[in-house]
Length: 237
Length: 240
Image 1 (cartoon, each protein chain N blue to C red):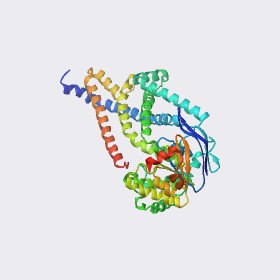
Image 2 (tube, one colour; image 1 turned 90 degrees about the vertical axis):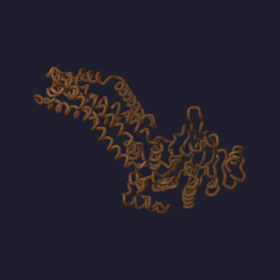
Image 3 (tube, helix red, strand yellow; image 1 turned 30 degrees about the horizontal axis):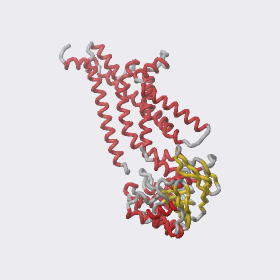
Image 4 (cartoon, one colour; image 1 turned 60 degrees about the horizontal axis):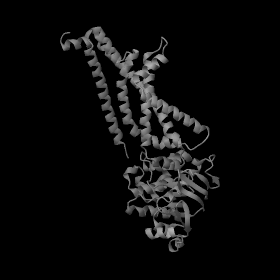
């Protein structure tokens, strides 16, 4: 086995193996980035449906549609939050993407996006509900309709409460994508395992992969901290 | 101008408003008083449908606003409202607070809306606060700005929901003063308040609501000098 230094040399430098980590890192970032985009999109829609549904005073088709939409959203959030992400990944991969030309990365993006959407929806919902209901009332009495009041008055304030929590969700998501290796996505986790099998020494590549995740998360946390402080400065509340 | 027909509001089995039939004419200044929990704020909030009445009708300028087909958003532009908690928009500057609705809803040009906002601010002596944010203002300043924010829409009636109840005592005067100016200028006003001095001085009619009903109403002189209803007598003996 040789010295520790030797083992890490073989896992990282020899035969340009660091390229495998870089390639894996790219895939991890790609999955995380697009998944959070999908997640935010789904999350905002669900949050708005869930917040507005009980307050909708109209009757007829609009009310029925909104109630049905609300039920579907609740079911979606319950299922996604109530099952392990690895299972969701395997089910989506085997259920939908069974054809030979299925792209594992796209599958992973869609799956993590759907998964993240459920969590983001709760974050956005909490953000909207943190805004005093007097703000909605003030907007409505000026003559704005519900959607306008949301857009001009409630959302701009809610975003300040949402962004920090969304950053944390992004951090969790980056780590969670390591599960994608079960559908043979060559992310950093999978590539570390490949290196391990090539060198017959699994421990050093795993430690390296852990280090890469750690650096990513710390970097992102610092970035969010700076961003949060900027946001705090412009916060005139 | 505003008429309520057998207005009822019921939460579960708690009856908040128990059949209110009232007409408010143009130019009237109606002050609504009553013990807490009597339904006076709910009555006010039913007038612009912030609370949906359980039954009964509310008419405003010839429109039945409780009819689902009625465009309530359009009519609310004509009914300004001022809240106990001011409800200024904290993410917008004072000027933006005032101009948001005129620009977005009345299609006013930004320059025109800004000019009008400055005019209104000058009227209350706060023109130098145009670019300040609500958190930099005192309670009295916030409430006066909330009032002119509503005025910027040129409403036909102004509804006040305990406008001075959240203020420090030394700031109550400046807000009441502005409301008095408004009344003198001929604005139709419905004011829910505990300020009996204001009721006496400004109201054209004082209305006593208790247990969800209008128990007594009269001109301020008669209302305070010669109350009939025993509940009103009891109430006045406590607050005067």
